[in-house]
Amino acid sequence: MKHMKLFVLLAVICLLVGSAFAVSKLMPATVDQDKCIGCGKCTEQCPTGAITLNDDGVATVDKDKCTGCLKCASACPAEAISA
Image (tube, rainbow, N blue to C red):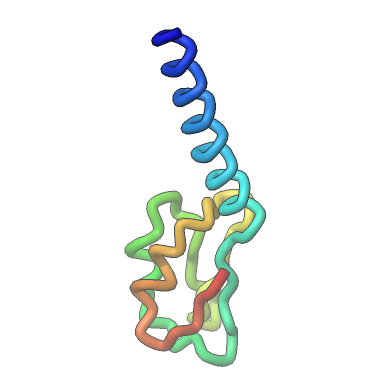
């Protein structure tokens, strides 16, 4: 019985972690092009390198690389990034 409880607990943890990861991948960061001031703070904070500044100096998100962690949004002084 003790092992069964442990197994169930581990299964629940895996489901929760997997679900959180799946949701974050479904909701990558988006940049409001009109609000972005091109400071680059988001690019410094992105752990996957998903955010770059384009030729106009505006942040863009590579949706394939973005994990949805939103560290970029926390770093953005212009509040131009959201999920």
